[in-house]
Image (cartoon, rainbow, N blue to C red; front, side, top):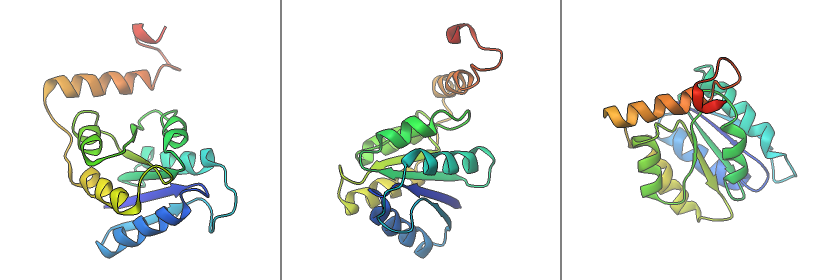
Length: 156
């Protein structure tokens, strides 16, 4: 699996930990963001990862900032991205299963590295549900992402 990780300065150390783990597991890994803990604006990393996921250049994305919130907001502006800010294993499981999330957002200042690694493992292992109710809702999420074009009724 190809996984693209991005971070700002607050998420740099955790990004490196997760990247090394993924490489050790045999995944192809790409990274965006700072090369050290110098100030870096999170929207730039979020945009790079989101673009790669949308284009199919990455199977999954992982974004890390101080809280994970800014990354999720930025990434979700891209049609086709379903970024979820996860804080424990259950939120990661449900984000993948129910929402078909394709970008995991983490808060490096909110959770410990071992917890982040555990969340990542669950996120990557969980398969999206094929139940009709989840498929219908994910389709609606994707339609909302297309509101700039010919919007569905609930985008007006």
